[in-house]
Length: 415
Ligand SMILES: [Zn+2]
Image 1 (cartoon, protein in one colour):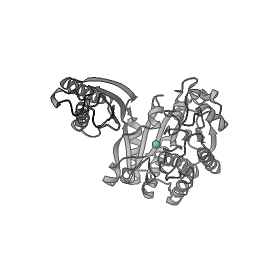
Image 2: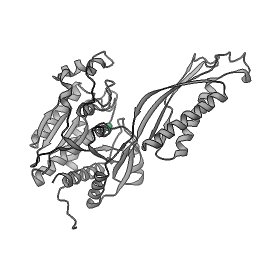
Image 3: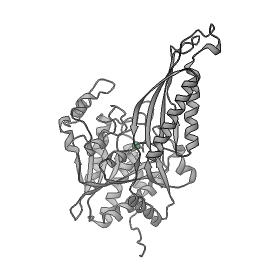
Image 4: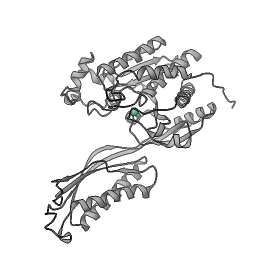
C-alpha cells in the first residue's frame, strides 16, 4: 500500500489566535481562569466558539444542557465521529485544559472541510459544557448528558457555593432543566479527545504526541483510625493506643504498595485530620484519605485490596479500630485498539514521534465510553507537568503537532 501524503497544514498562528481569544474569557482576579459552567464567562466562551463554527460554515447546535456541537455533514448516513473536549475550567485554571481539545476539533474540521469538502462520514466537534465540576458537584455533567446518565431531578438537587441550584443556573442561560434528557445522543460511534497530558512524561522524553492506551481507575477511600485520647504527659508510651502511630504507618504502607506495583500505580494521602487536635492530647481518632489509581481494572482492584489488608494488619498490631468508606470510584477505561493504531499511523505519516501513555486524570472520554463508543485520546506535553494552574502550558509547536495528528486521524476515519 502506498503512503498518502498529508495535504493539510495546521498553522501556528491560527492555533495561537484561538488559544489567545479563549484565554481572555473568565480571568480570575488572583490569576489564571475561572470559567465555570453557566457563568457569564462561560456563556462568552460558548458564544465565541459558536461564532467560530458559523464563520467556518459549520452547522452549530446547542443541546439541552449547553454542550455546543459543530457539524460537518457526511455524504453517507450513519453515526457521527465526534471530537472535542470541555470548555469550562478549574478554579484559577490554565488556558489549555479542555479548551485546547475544543480548539483542536474546530481547527481540524475547518481544515478538512477547506481541503477536502464534505466527508463520507459526519464529523462533529463538541465543546462540553462542564467537566471540571468547579462550580457544582456535577461530576461530568456535560458528557453524562450526552451519554444519557443524568438522573431525573438531578439539576434541582445540586447547588453551588452561593446556594444557586444547577437548574436555576441553567435557566439563567436560557436552558430548560426539565429537558436534560434531550441531550442524550445515540448516533455517535467514535469519540477522539485531544487533551494536555497534565503530567511530565512527554516533556521529559521530548515526545510531542501521546496516544492514550487507558484512563486509569480512580478510587478514593476515607479511613478512620480510632484509638484512645490520653494525656500526653500522664500516659507512658507503652500504655497508649495512639491512632496517629497507626495512621503514620498506613500512609507509608500505601506509598510502598504503589512503589511495589510500579509505574503507573500511584497512591496519595492528600488529606488528614486528628481529633481532638490538641498538642497535649494523644489523638482519639485520625481520619485520612487514600487516592489510588491504576489503569488495569483487575490489577487496580488487587492494588487497593493490598492497601486495605496492610492497614488492617497495622491496626490489629497497634490495638486500633479501623473503619473505611469509599468516596469515589471510577473504573478504568481502555482505548479502542483500532483507533490507537490509526492515531499512531497518522503521527508516523506526519513524522512526529509518538508514545503510548496512560491518563492519570479523568476525562469526558471515560463517560462517553460507557455508551460503548469507540474512543481514544491524543495527549500533548504539559510544561513542567503543570495543569489546573495559571502556568499550565504546551509549547505552540507541540499544540500544532497534536492538532495535525488529530486532523490526519479524522481524515482517515471519515473520508
Ligand atoms: Zn480537562
